[in-house]
Image (cartoon, rainbow, N blue to C red; front, side, top):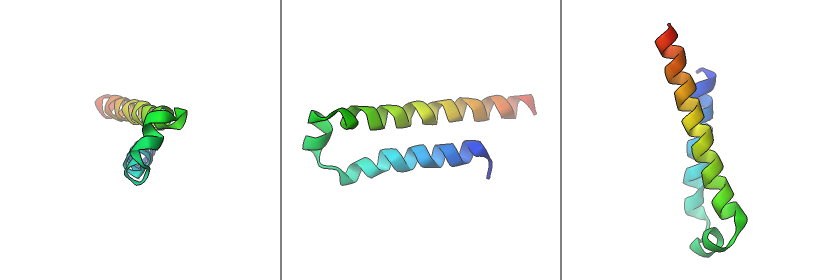
Length: 57
């Protein structure tokens, strides 16, 4: 496993863990916006880094 796969897995785990949180928590609190947003940004960056590394090789 390389770093890209680890980061993508972690981001996916963070986003999927939101299914365990009640909708009212997600609508009314700052972590409800920060957690999925951060996970999506980290996942997107990891994907772009992975694609860039593969295109160089």
